Amino acid sequence: METCKNRKKLAACLSILFVANMLVLSVQVSAESLEGKAEVTEPSDLENFPSAEAGGPYTVKENESIRLDGTESEAPVGDSIGYSWEITKDLTGEASLVDRDTPRPTFHAPAVDFDREIVVTLTVSDGREVTDEDEASVIVKEVLKPADFDLIDLGITPEKVSPNEIVNITANLVNTGDKTDNYRIDLFIENELEETNTYTLNPDQSVLVQFETSRENEKTYDVRLNDLEGSFTVEESLTPYPFLIAVILFLAAGVIIVVFWWFVKARIGRRRKGGASR
Image 1: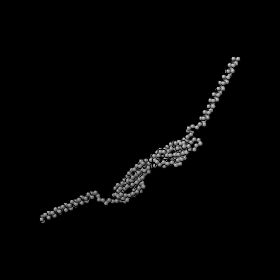
Image 2: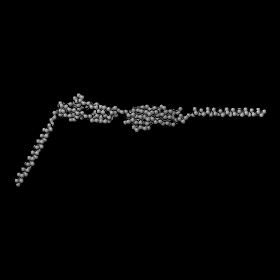
Image 3: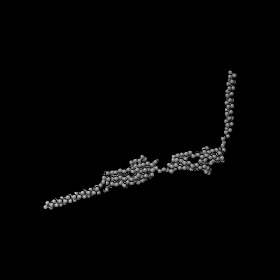
């Protein structure tokens, strides 16, 4: 009888333990299920705010335009998104934006004297006065102009010469471009090529171009230096030879001395006659 009672107590204890274990297991499963639902349905902090994405970096040539791209920006699900672009760094002060309240505005690059970085800032909003900002660099590239040569200021000296006398022909050559290059200059006399020189000039460099020529026959000669035109004249010289000039000067000096001596002598003679009459 005592044994029977012990068996009943043992069975009752086992039943109680089984029920308790089932309740604990049920509570754990329910808690895990609720936690999983919370992880799925609870939005993150990032999803509650807009996110700006200005794109870039961008590269554009000076005096040209480029479209910026902020379409990767995001707003919370169900919220509208607003765009606002601004130029926040521009040392030239000449860059500009068109359609700045759209996701893809147009950026107009200024003229630059060297490559410059300009910074634009995109601000996005979700309609609830919550905003986010992102910056992007726009590199404006200088466009180098090719070499540009100007040949100016033709000089022909002397313009009138004796036969076989040297004539100097000069001009100024200037490179107003942005690159170093070569320039050929042709000297034509009476439409016949006489001489050719080639010059190498750096940007903003200038050089004096020089040629020499002479002619024996008496006439006027046409000169052309690329697109510059002029002339010089060869004629028989009317100037006496140097020896003849020296003789003339010597004789003139002698005449002056004789006249001066005669004048002084005459004055002395008058003074003597005046003194004797007294």
